[in-house]
Amino acid sequence: MSEDRTLTSAERKAWRALYETHGLVTRRIESDLHAAGVGSLSDYAVLYALYEAPGKSVRLAELADAGMLSRSGLTRLVDRLESDGYLRREPFLDDRRGTLAVLTDAGTEEMRRIWKIYSAGIARYFAAQLSETEAEGITATLRRVVSALGGD
Image (cartoon, rainbow, N blue to C red; front, side, top):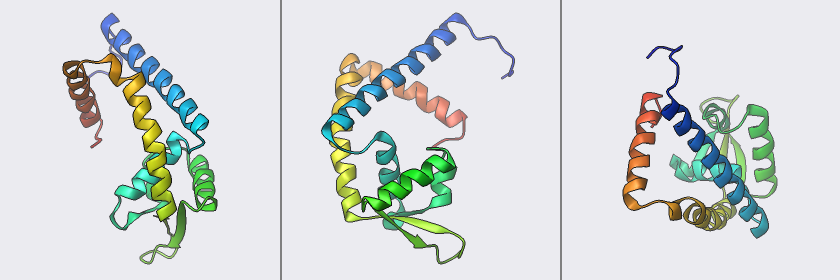
């Protein structure tokens, strides 16, 4: 596909709708999380990445490479999550320069508290506006984009 191709009106509208929807929904969910006194969506992203990883641990460099946040933003977030007891740092045995972030039991519990509010927000602000068929169509379309960009 040519990099200088002009977007059609429908393509511009689709992008704008996706962009606007994501912004509105995530801001509402962040507000709900704050009101509930639990962590942020960024906290959840890191805690969930650790939860899903083998041994519930990930090299800090891999978290940074995943592009969740800037390297400095990720460092500050990991510092705070460690201070709160939600993860701990351990040396990466295969590379003395590397450090692992390891999920703690408290981190798993915080992730679950966040998910309770997060999933309710997804249901209220996003899913409630869609039929099952529409949700399946959006999923198929966005999965195709993710695949084309080399994501999983």
